[in-house]
Length: 428
Image (cartoon, rainbow, N blue to C red; front, side):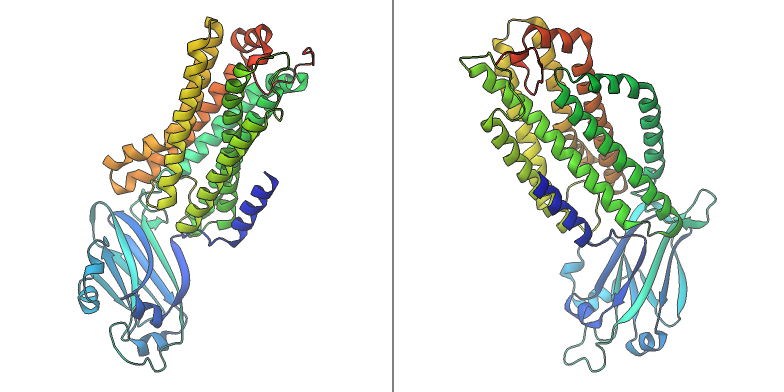
């Protein structure tokens, strides 16, 4: 686990910053020539008074190159066009003849993605590019209209509302912590049965809350300048990934531990966290697989988010892994419940299964549901839905292991059937 965290931290500081709506960089004639135009970014405009503004450092060089910005409404079919046809098909063309210039986007009946591309006189020419290899530094700002109709909103249509959602979620976390922090601390201080489980759940919940807070800080800054603090956004992703890893290891250890404990001839020793090499090896293998897919997904997608309406191969593999884990846990719980005589224990396992399935299946189900949604709704629905569902899952597991009617009675009836226990009354 320590090595895994080191890998994630290295990834954090070597990954590209999140693409903001104030984009800085360099225009390169060779890149534009190789790709029939240098792709810059995309932005979902909505309503009236959408704005795109640019600034270049060397306007004389831009004029010499006959540099232009092309805005395409959607990118489908562009790859099938020749270079000249692509340049001629752009609805909006902005000549870079001034150091700074603004351009208003036509009225949008609904949110629509616009793609920005750089071209110049060398883009569609053959032969040598004499004197064209010098790069041109730029800054592009894209804004939607705010509530008053002024082009001051840096958020794309697919991001609108996330800032308010994170604020409300922080408020909910704060209220819940004020109410439940004392009884939870007392339960952790007792160091009774399931102490390790409660510690892992608490750590995962703390990481989730930290991720939400960091995302809110990033978006609060983003709302002002269109860039935000990419490092804070990356830290939020790191916290979420570690929480995912912890919860996966916990849930697998519990289910496999229960399965192995029932197959033992001698049940005089309660299953501890590290007492089963088989369960530990299986949990670690799946955790490493998920970590590799998460790292691959972050490297594939330049716009980093904790959750995606999947468009990449590692994203689909990650969802397939979660579905496979849900099926595995379902089979393990079915074998346990079908052979269990105690109705109290069956209720315990069923409640545990609900929390597990909600954690693993919420992302794949929401991604499938997002297929029927519009483009600007997909990312918001998946992000908000997954965060809420996984928070509810943690609450369900908390109530299960802290409930006097289930947790204390089940643990007192048979501590050997509950893994990860630390009961001092057990005899070895």
